[in-house]
Amino acid sequence: MFSKFKNTITAIIVAVLTVSCGGVALTQEAKKARMIQPDWANACKMIGMEQVQSTDGLSPADCKNKAFFLMLNKVAEVGGNAYVITNQSEPMPCLLMGGTTITVEVYKCPEK
Image (cartoon, rainbow, N blue to C red; front, side, top):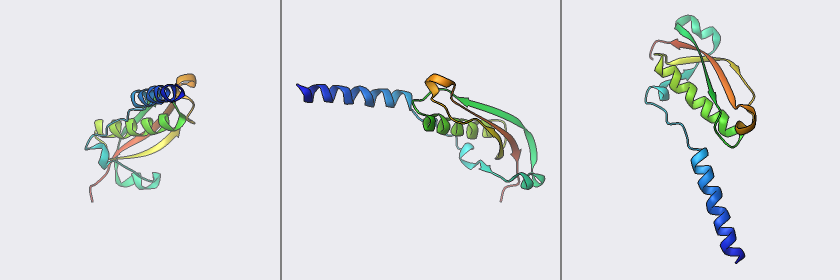
C-alpha cells in the first residue's frame, strides 16, 4: 500500500513540475541576442529600454530562468540583437512574492 501511495505522490509532483516549470521557448532571433558591456554600446544603435517579469514558477531559479528567456525574446521582438542588463530583482518565490524582473537596454549592433 505504501508503494502505491508513493507512486501516486511522485506522479502528482512530476505533473505539477511539468505544468508550472514549462520552459519559455526562444525564437530563432532571440538565440542570436548577446549581452554586451556598456562601453561597447557606442558601436551600436540603442533601440530602447525594456522590462520583463516572470511570476510563474515554483522556485526562484525557475523564475529567474524564465525571466531571462522572456528578456531574450523581448530583445529580438523589438529588433535588437544585443542588450545590457540595467536592473534585475532578486528572484523570490514566484507564487508568494512576485517573481523576477529584468530591465535591459536593447541595442542593434553590427553583425560579425
